[in-house]
Length: 157
Image 1 (cartoon, rainbow, N blue to C red):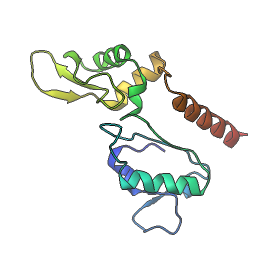
Image 2: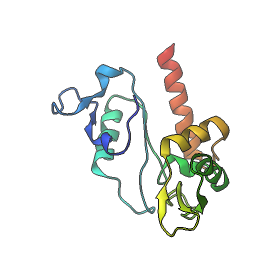
Image 3: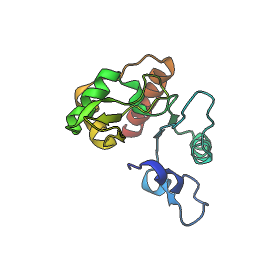
Image 4: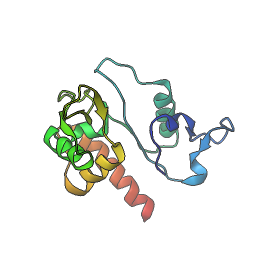
């Protein structure tokens, strides 16, 4: 199942949850989840929804990876992200943000325009997955990735 952004607030693992939540376990008995932290700096708190989902996943011993930086795209090099954004949008003059793990990784400036635009996340993600490899600078990144791969393999055995 793919979710995006605000839809996370509608997911739950808890079978006793409010009826207007999407109950994940009937859809998938062995779920794993990757959540962008959306943190703007290292001291930013995680939103309550992300903490609730994390607690629910811990309860059923399923992987819940909340990125250390703002978004998963922050694990790709700036050059790779720029190339991906340029492959999706024709009027890119450069990436708008800085190069820290808390900067907006796929916001860009348009040629001849002062506004900042966020690139099509799905199209950029598809380009990156098909053409590039993440820069694994973080031991935590490698650990989370390995955990999810092993969990998926075990679920398929």
